[in-house]
Image (cartoon, rainbow over all chains, first blue to last red; front, side):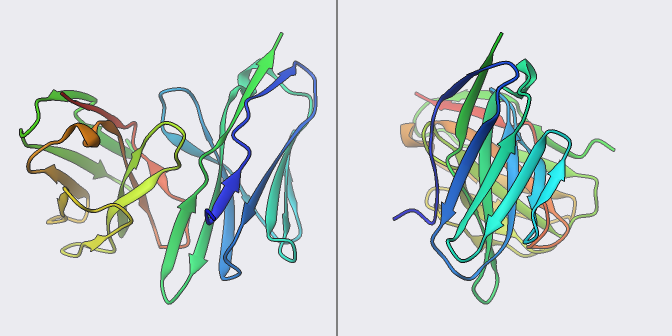
Length: 111
Length: 112
């Protein structure tokens, strides 16, 4: 079982739609969580950190469920510019920190 | 600030050739990383460094070597390239192990 798993998609949605991504992690020693965005043929960039209480940044909402070991990303009112791959990232502490990247979920937003 | 830069952006090698990828960061970060990214797979850590003069193996270190002679630079070497090393290589840096990682633009390497 992979340490971090994501639905690879692709998710094809029309502009204005709401779309949700989930990511599950297997190691209960996971300490911190992030969502990164990666555009085609570009480097990953931090979208937002994920806090235990949940957090929101404009149209984006991230939530963490430690009991079920998953994190989620909700995008409201999708824009064409949201088309990208979204990577789930987990930091695991096992004496030292180890960062695990999910394989990513591809999103296509259509006009 | 330039952030994290990588050179070269593209390279084609023949099997058995060697090359060095250079990563530089101007954020005074202690931690630096080399990843490879292949289709359908997440980023996989090759080697990393927790400070000047230190290096450590990641998940897929075989066939690669690294050096961190200066805090701002992290070099990745391929001594004898193989077709299996065809990939996109990303360098990243962070202030600490638990912090956000900032990535360079990547190097697309093809080994024929």
